Image (cartoon, rainbow, N blue to C red):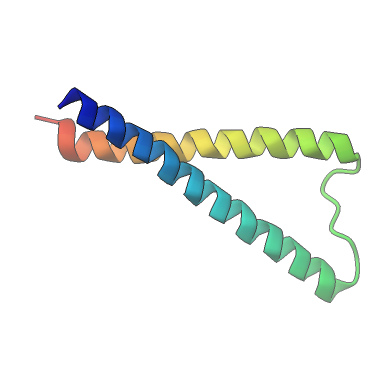
Length: 81
């Protein structure tokens, strides 16, 4: 039973990563479409390296939040007595 729960938690991590990547890809597509039709650059952050750092932090935080949410739903549904 413990091995099943461990494998399911690993599956939760993979699902959270897939959802997170999908959300970030959709956000990237929306920003590029906005820039294409607006003909002006949407600059949130000016520095290239600072932008990379912030995006990495935001990606990691959103991944942790999504994984936590999926785990809590799993615990509520299957592990509460």
